[in-house]
Image (cartoon, rainbow, N blue to C red):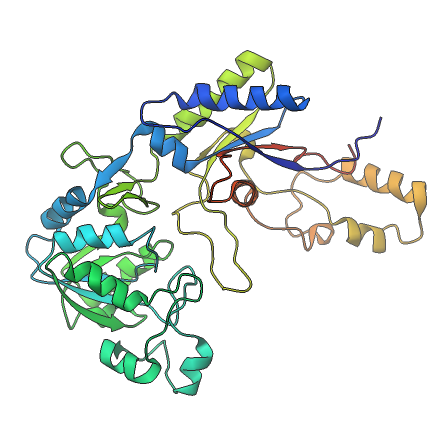
Length: 397
């Protein structure tokens, strides 16, 4: 019988996961109980994705504000002032990082990008800049000048004035603060040659520009807690990038050693079901909100680890293109049979082929991570595990 349902994505409920829990057993048992209770059958090439948050929790990958402060003090021990540049505007993602940085510094020159941060959280709009004849690529604004031009703007979703909010975080630690708004890294250097750049996806370029401009100390947020400090959690690849607030004094870091996690889960599924289940760990999905303009990718990568079957990009033809061009003279069952035959004979790499024009040129893990993130959400659904079925099926099957 022909299967009439394509890709499905299901959130799988799981127990509340704590430090020391066996993430492999929890993921496999949760999925098997869910499919049994729902009458679902696992198939080869089904995909199980696990949110990075529960992997990090099971690992106990946490660090305190004091741990951050100790690392900052060590890496900026010769600095009277630290330029903290290009942070994202987020209470959850950055406020505790900033608290720890301030605790380890004497003075911070906080330089924010504008009109928005790297992931689209806006301070002002481009229309407002145009109205005031401000060029964000050239103009460096002091806090006073920014207030003269734009007043006190609050984030449309959170209701927070992030300039005041971040200033108060710094001041609460007994640290001096000066605020700038600029979009070129070198704009901070007249204030201090010691720079901690906090951008996520542009960090390599920022380092290169700072080196070229003669900065004395250059450190990325990825280099803060890239090793354990006093027994703290850490991430050797991403440091504080991808971290989230856990308590008022504690951060959950991005998980580490994720490849061994997905490999163990894959092997356990194979042992218990005989099925080759693809497995991935996912963080923020790579998509942009069309209304708020926020790009949902505050994690350094969508997926830090995945099994081999998830390597690469989709290799699909555009059905509409084939139907309207190659087989425009056909319809009904004859058209369906012709398209199925065309799919079965398609090449292994359709890059540059007109038949693939308009299909999504993104990595499988980025597409699947976005699907997983949208399915699980970030609230109280209680589904940190996602089961995706039928993703690799095509019209020919």
